[in-house]
Each structure stands twice: as C-alpha cells, then as structure tokens.
Length: 460
Image 1 (cartoon, rainbow, N blue to C red):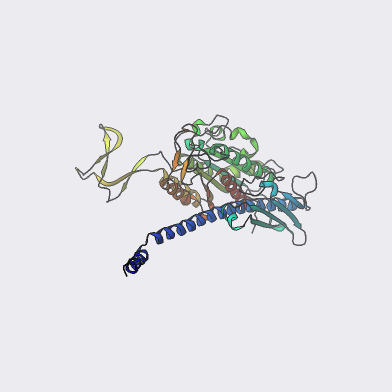
Image 2 (cartoon, one colour; image 1 turned 135 degrees about the vertical axis):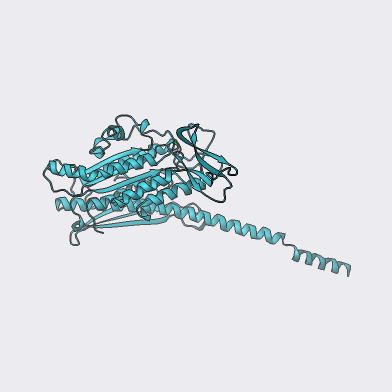
C-alpha cells in the first residue's frame, strides 16, 4: 500500500510539474521563430532579385522602343541596341550578387520585337539560392519580370533639368553592408562613397545612351544636369559644383562630360541636407528662363522643361542651426538672449524659469524642417523629387578610420532619416530604401526608368 501511495504521489508530481512543458514549448517556439526569420531572409533575397530584374526589363524595353521609334526596325549586328533574341544579364553588363544562383550569367533576358502589336517585350528570368528553405528540399526560388513598351507611345525627347543632391558626409566611407553579430565584416564589402560614384556613372552613361544626343540638330541642349554634394568645399575645382559656384547656375551637359565631375567627391564632414537642397531650388528656379534662352538662340520652339531632383542620404542631419520647439513635458526652459550685450544671440536654459522670457521645450536642429520646406516649395513649382535612404539598416558598420569601433545605425537614426526622405519625396513610391550597395544601384536604375518615361513621354 505504501508503494502504491508513493507511486500515486510521483504521478501527481509529474502531472503538476510544468518544467518539461515549458521546455518543450520553448523549443517549439524557438524553431518557429528561427523558421520565420529564415523564410523572411529567403523571400527578402527573392524580392531583391525581382526588383533588380524588373529594372533591367524596364530599361531594356524602353531602349528597344526608342530604337524602333528612331529607325523603324530592330537593331542589327553592330548597332547600339539589342537585336531580338536571348541574352544573359552578364552579356548586357549587369551584375547579380551571390544571392542569385550562378550570378548574372544564369539570369536570362529575352528580347522580342512584335511588329504586329508595335511593341517591345522583355522578360527576365532566374533563380535565387535559398538558405533556410533548403532544409525542406527547396533548392531554388524562381523569379521573373516582364516589361512591355509600345513603339507608338514614344514621343520626341522633352527638355529637362535634373539635380542630384548627394550625401558625401563622413559616414559614406563606411562599408555598405552591416557586420555580423559576432563582429565579422561582410565577405565583399564596398565603401559607400565608391558605390555612389559607380551608381552616378552608370546613371549618366545609361541615360545618355537611352535618350540619344543631348542636343538637337541645331545644337540646342535639351538636358541640363547639376550635382550638389553635401560638402562642396571638399570637392575639387573640376567638379560641377565648383564650376558653377560663381554663376549659381547648373552646368551644361554634365552627363556628357565625364568622371571629372564625380571622382573628386570624398566622404568627409558632417550631415546637413539644407544648404544643397536650398541651392537646388535656386538652380531649378532659373531653368525655365535658361531653356527659353537656349531655344531662342537656335530659333527652336520653347518647351517648358521637366524638372527632377534625386536626393540621397545615408543618415540623419547632424549639423545646422538650433531652434526652440515648444514641449510642455520636458521640465526644461529656454530663452534666446543677447550675447554679452552684442547683437549676436545665444540660447540659455534653466531647470525652472526665472522670468517670462523662458519657455518650456527642446532645442532641435532646423536642418530637417528647412530641407522639407525647400522640397515642398520645389514640388509646388513643378519639380518631381525622388529620395533614397542608403545604408540605413539598423546595426553596426565597419569604419576604416575606426577599425576597432563599429559605427552604429540606430532605430532612431533610421526613423529620423526615413521621415525626412518620405516628406521630401513627391509621392510615396518615389522614396526608396536601399540597404546595401547593390540596392543603391537598383534604386538609381528605378529612378532613371521613371525619368526616362517622362522624358520620352511613355504613356503607360
């Protein structure tokens, strides 16, 4: 009887002991969490490949339609274009990083000219290499992208002015990808500033090849482009910024001049988007008259130019003027006072106010506010603005000047920068998040496609 009671007691204890259940529940939950993270990573890789492929399809189809419009036939061998047929992305000069099976050599690009429908069709196909989903026997994930452009929807090139406002602050020397949680650098890191220069060069050369000559037969310049780095004082005198500083006007034909306008950019200095954005507004405010003068010079009909701004930054603003922002929860009070009786002013603060001049709140940089004001003013004046948030994935990044101290991008930094860029973009889809260098190159491709559709008047 004693043994029976002891056995019954053990069963009751086992029944009431939840430790094993908790361990089992934790194990199952951990597997589910890891599985969700792994699947999310695989589908993020697939999404990147699809976005890159769509950009290639759009660009190739647009170029094909332009060629047909200009020559009334598909390209032949020796022409500056792609004849009908099957190509690889590698043959076309595109890159896919390690997340695509076999890289660009295994990504197919099919170009079709349908003379009956009067349209060019381009299809891009390939496979990504999953990591987690291979556990379940999924060795690859297929992706495809298609673009169709009608020959009849291509009109003559429209005059345009494009300004690039580019962050070249000190953080642009960091790696373009995060270090691992264990502190390891990525396998193929690139300096952010180097990727930016490559992206601009590609933007320049591809835009020029797609729209053809920037001048009419009479010599009229139809595309005017300027570049405004954040820190213009560290750009050599050969740059577009320095070359136009005296006239405060955009440099003619920047896209056709060469790398001398791009190479001098260095990653140095603080982050303040306000001065270059304010100057961009001044430049674009003069462009109607500049295009009118150019049309009159060659006795061409004046056409009001399209205006675009491409605004890229990799962080929140860290410099600018301080301004008071009221907030009744801070228990900190500020007043703007003369400095030693002279006209200069400074902010003084108290834990409690000693007179009515003190107001409760915070001191904040005005850089974001005045940048957004410039953006909205330009939008009201007819400028379309594209924005790119580059290298802003939360984590730590290798800095060659501080190799033993990884530099952080916090959630606050990301949120602040994204809020600025979202506010400046003309519409939600004009704001692009580019976590890595590859995604930055894709962002410039996407923006170029959008601009070309406007320049050549693609109606769909």
